[in-house]
Image (tube, rainbow, N blue to C red; front, side, top):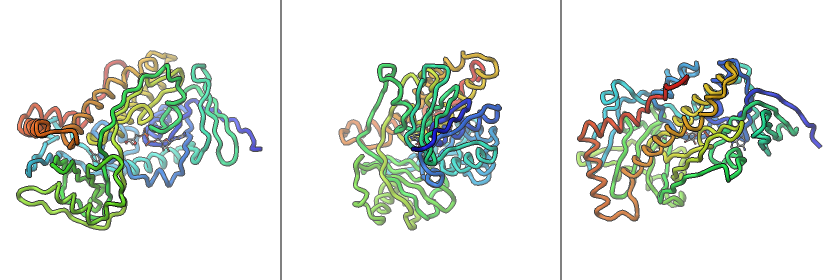
Length: 402
Ligand code: APR
Ligand code: PHB
């Protein structure tokens, strides 16, 4: 039988996604020790294609934390997006509408690489490929995490647990169900996403509402196109050979004056279901949930990663305050503070999704109403400003000590 190994850290972090890694790094900058436990291998995390649009506030956070060097060099700063419908394209000038705010296109897995390397260089511990991860004694002052790592059964004692293990992790289900309320909306469609070796056909992202369904043209770099098509939630990817994908993208992104997509080898394709999900509260005893472990947004507003970063920014402040001032006021308000932003972003992501997708249940009235709303967004400065403010990211809550 494997040996029992005891570890001790101030903050045990479950999950080495963006939430767990940023939290660990922010704590380290304040002299607080943490260990991350992760079920997947390092190369899996560093290659997993996820989101790619960073709000100004997320960019600022990564820069201030000293992990933004490569992002500043390689990230693509976008001052606008295009909304395309009825064969016409309309630019939303994010920068002008928000007094200078923009977004940065820099892939999530590159952020993960930068953060893993920063943590390891600073002597931080990330235990990859752990199994049987469990959390215990959450309502005591000394919670524990147990797991199997490198053939040894480990027990890690700590003061706090950061539950950063994503939607399918074990942290949220470890909270007694009577203590949690969950709110969920499943959408009757998914996104078929591709990554292709092709120069993006547009300098900026294009969101298209088309009678055949939503399409999005995005990018990962000046030579890699990322694109999505609205599809059935259980769409069979085998029914989508590369040429069918390109044809459908061309069809949905076309304009009356003509639009030409650059095609190239498709490197990856997959289908993602879409959901909105929130659990309340985001804390139970000494367990604090952050990122996808606590909430999911549909990807239309590109908010998942940004919301995870906003959570851990608050969580790090709360934990730092607890150690420095022996004050639990902020940690007690963690959930309440996060949920205000979470619900604002939930609304925005739902709104973008509803505005741009075709719903099977929609009739002619619904479709015309949707087009009228899009006209309003592109023609009214007030409506465009609302979109731009939310898209580039609402300012962080600066009330209190945050
Ligand atoms: N024990 C340890 N780690 C776990 C466990 C477990 N039982 N279960 C899951 N994990 C790990 C996953 O392997 C993953 O690396 O937790 C990590 C969670 O990371 P993410 O899913 O990336 O979630 P988060 O850090 O909250 O980042 C949110 O990711 O899904 C996107 O759109 C989302 O961009 C947003 C971002
Ligand atoms: C992406 O590039 O993956 C992406 C961009 C914008 C979105 C969603 C996803 O709204």
